[in-house]
Length: 202
Image (cartoon, rainbow, N blue to C red; front, top):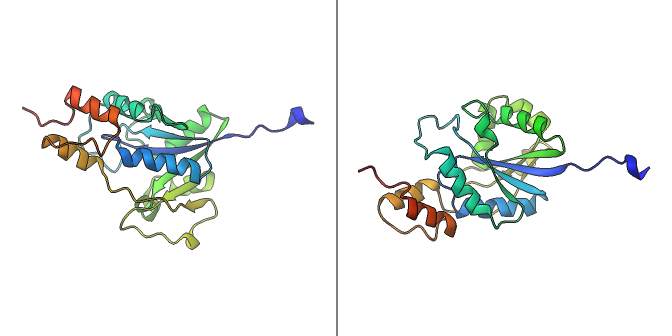
């Protein structure tokens, strides 16, 4: 019976990061993966604290979220998410995926990670459980080679462009008074300029 058919779950990619700040590479990569992996949405999940970057100095969570929301506001299928804000720190991916699955049972979550993270995936907390319960999309990163033929069935390597831009470069240029318009979405450049983010302390 048609009324008894199981409703298809919303295919949702999880692209986590500190986005300190978000840049053009993040947005372009998320948009490319949205189409290439045939996802319904990609959530750019802002991480309050990355377990691998406990000592890094981050701009306030809400300020980074404001920039992330501005960056994807006009990008169809891309969503800025603050879901991890309410979870314990540091943010472990397995815990986040469990919480997401419980909160949104109508969605099927796919983890999106770079090739550098896949190479070191066995060091991730509960990596075996992540692999057993979720699809994973891997995008290329310079200096990290991944052989697609060796990947598990639920892990897919996408042939996406390498984006030669980093948040570190953006922060460094701001601190030196150099333009960043070519590195970040216009609304992000405006926020950084108007509010003085990443300027050196007086």
